Length: 383
Image (tube, rainbow, N blue to C red; front, side, top):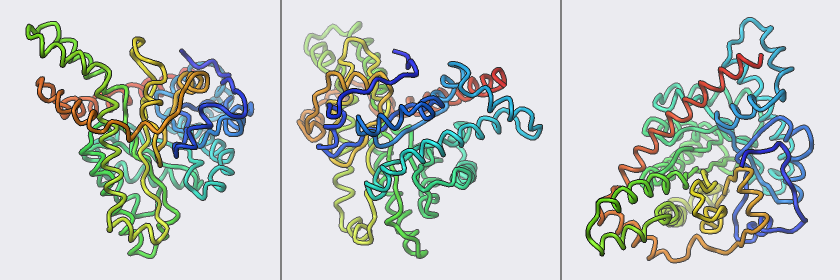
């Protein structure tokens, strides 16, 4: 379902609002100019308990290509000879991020800085460039000039030291494109190191916020494809049964076990020293939670990943679906042995989760690079 530009809002209390009772915040994985200017964003905040927003090159490319929402600004920016397509995009992107952040400012205030954030992403071309990521993140943070934003940094080997450095400088970061439990743990530990460095320099750790964006549905898409291929060639009845039992189960199991790492890391004595100074945990944010397989429930990646101190950033269609027929429960800590068994069975049938997550990281980078290329073309076309 493509966003229509009009997001239907429902009654004052609904399944989206009820997620807050379980400690989960809903953010919107979508941004477009009319969402800000028509009052729809404020209605989502007031009626659905929306607590934040995320953006990426794909979202902006669709928004710019969808209509005339940015035509006036793009024409004005084109007249500035010193701005190329990327410069023009950054100008309109920064305006949207600033305006959305201002609308979310009351949420930021009422939650004492836990929520109310809008994310802006560094160029996907920098995913393998540590220093480039640091430089662009600093520039975006300064240009937007809002304390309730997060700069998105990729969860790559090169993004990891960039993230730690930026946290140590007091810049809020959303680490994106996380698939691997091991990389998630590395990111969580880098967050703690970054805060310790900030505190040692006299910075206020209580003012810091970060999320680790763990991608979900793409894992099932990749795992299901491998499982289906194995089912075609398998002649062993027991193996066939094991393979069938894994379909649609890997992504949620992987997410649940990542959250178990979160619980362990942020209950350590080392963390408690920072918490005593007012530091907030780096929450796990579930991303890519729109269901891609029509055979699965369209709210599966919301209902099965509900837990304390988490965020789910939902595309418009999933937001509407969960409001309509979602059933919240404290699902994230349910059946952890079953999640462990799922990952063990995956390994037993010869499918490597590490190979899946490594490939998805590379594919994710390429996907965002392709979207950014299309975005810049859309900027040129609509200017």
